[in-house]
Length: 263
Length: 199
Image (cartoon, rainbow over all chains, first blue to last red; front, side, top):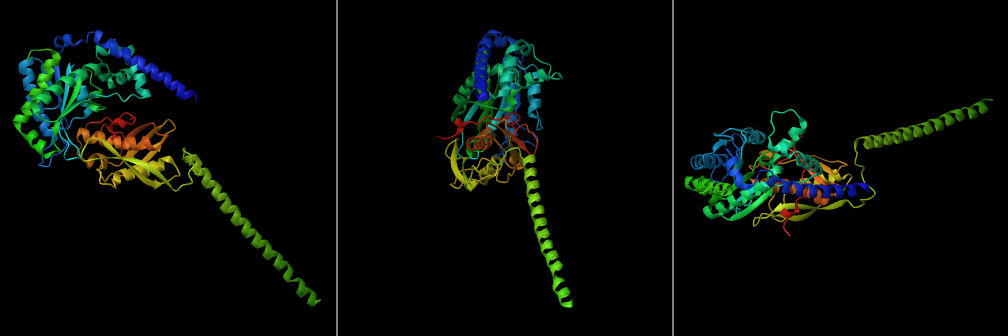
């Protein structure tokens, strides 16, 4: 009987901690207006690659090829129009582990992280585009991590050396995204609005999911699912270069609005 | 004399015979009885979850499984009977095998049909560890939506049907894996998510 009471108390403590974290974060120098000045590097992550093909289409198109094509187009747009350095987590058809992708973003001090995917489902009718940000599947273990995060937000902001052997640092690194949920949510919302406006695909909205690629990234981070490769109609759109360019343009416009840069 | 001797001679043989029969019976009781005790001790020592035999007189348990429908993104419930006992972990293995086997009402399975349930372990801390064969990540080319459905069909099936299960960890071929197909983080324990289930 002691345990449940204990847990309730801990739950309340977590809720309080979360409130404090979300209240404190924007004040500590992460306000949207300042972001444009602070960001120097945008990391774009073309989903999958190499042996890991991602979802497959009926006509033989592979998610990994489409994500790379869109990513290269987005890179060109951001470099040309925003003047940021753009780093791709892969620029050819190779295997890159999910952990390495977040590590690339953190090592290169990414100010924004965009993972690009095309969706797949067992239902042939499934269609549309959506944008994800990280959901915190809060468990007791996470409660402790969040508590640690809250007490050490300055340590997070000064950025952690990913090669550090310090266990506490590694734990913190592992959940780095928890400090950026609010910004990531805003970024997802703006990008999704542009996808909806430009692509003409069904608007599946913004969603939260426990995606590995987002969890370890220490900056606002989203995962875009542009249309369904498992839907034959949308597969053909995804394979077409003009549609790929539209996806890149929509994401670019969403970024620009987030950074309050005139398009 | 001869008559008396003849009459006495069978007596010790009879006694010996009776004695040997008694001995054999005792020996049988000793060995089989002792043997059973040893087997019971063996079970106690190696299976932490005690089989609740007396609490489950029924031979079957009704479980709720979660499948996909062609018309929406939600998980849909379907009930099924599985053999009951002796442990919750074994019932959980059977429930997951049914989930992989697929729907009886024409719903879609979110997991590759080749997948085998290697083992389910339910810890005292409420964490169920599910070990699936490598087919679960190799036989499907997952998109995000599909991978979320696959993971939460497993997690919800366990948490919904087994009171002892609060969280679920998914292993592939006995080892921790980053993701099934590049999306959902398998390195952390999952809480069930019933927001994905149709009303």
